[in-house]
Length: 109
Length: 120
Image (cartoon, rainbow over the protein chains, first blue to last red):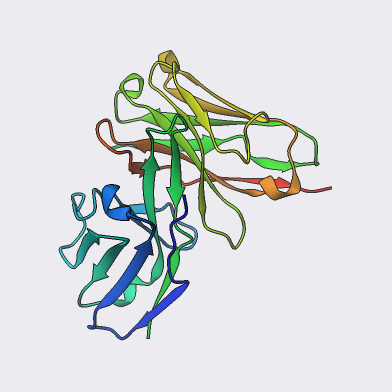
């Protein structure tokens, strides 16, 4: 089971960044998203497709339909520059495991 | 606040062994399943192991199965990863992670990570 993300996305400050995470029938899974900055621990920014943990601004939102889940960051700020990973937990096939996408580097121009 | 502090990393030769520890605080450790995730240099995140709160259920990624062993000590709020037969491609930062308690697993809280370097 593979999660496919674009390697990079570039966005100007104040604009909107959209990051896709693709897999066959991914809508049947709960998709979670992490922000990872160099030298820091990853931070959960969305869980269960579109839920925000406390402390994560409403500028971060998500959706999950068909074969693609999407993380959307509106009004992008310089501090949003990071690598973003999608993740699912695969179970039910006798081999529970975590699966991450390859990561998308968001560059704020 | 949740604290997860990894230790035990370092430089080891191929074929060698290393034992990582994770000291947990700020939550009831014995109530939570726990996870190890790693990140090789220039690569993405990779889930490598899961242990249930009772240690009854343990799962590994295929890349480490048969070489790594996860364990825990609930009395001392500690998680461990015994790494044997280490290979160059095991070089990575290893993160101790606490997932959510219910529902599809996501990874709530992360340690800062510990570096393991496998090189001759």
